[in-house]
Image (cartoon, rainbow, N blue to C red; front, side, top):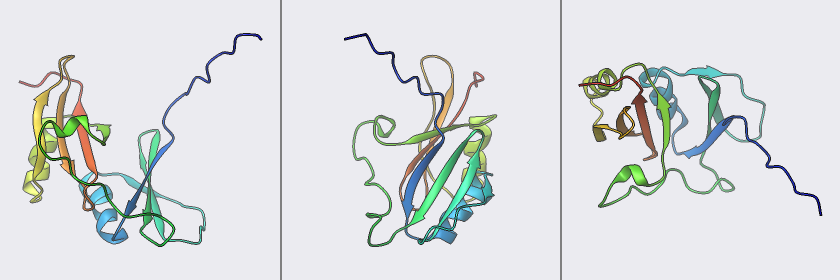
Amino acid sequence: MPEQTPIRVRFIDHVTIVVKDLGRSRQFYVDVLGMEEVPRPGFGFAGAWFQAGPSQIHLIEEHAASGPAGLGRATGGSISRGHHFAFEVADALAAAETLKSRGLELAAGPKHRPDGPTQIYVHDPDGHLVELFSRQMNA
C-alpha cells in the first residue's frame, strides 16, 4: 500500500460556540473585542458570525439541538491548560486595562509565555475562556 501524505491543514476557518443570549455575546465579541459582524447564511436557528483576522467566530444561540451553552469553568490548577481559544492583539497589557475599565475581571494574567508573548484570559458571557496575547515582550 502506498504511503499516504498528511492532509496539511492550512488554517482555522472558524470556531463555533453555543451561547445563551445572542445579544449579550454580540456585545462582548463586537463592542469589547472589536470583531466585525459578517453576514451569516439563513440557517433555521439563531446565530451570528464575526470576523477575527482570517478566522471567524460562529455563535449559535442555545436550542434543543445545539447542546448547552458555555463550558464549565476550570477549577484549581492553571485555567490556560483547559478548553480555550486565543486571539492575537497588538498589546495584551493594554487589552487587560481595557477589559478592567469595562468592568470585566481577568480570569488569569497577564503572564509571560516561555517563548516571549504576554497572555491574558477573560471569560465571555457564557464562560468560554478567551485568551488574548501579544507577541511583543512586555515588561
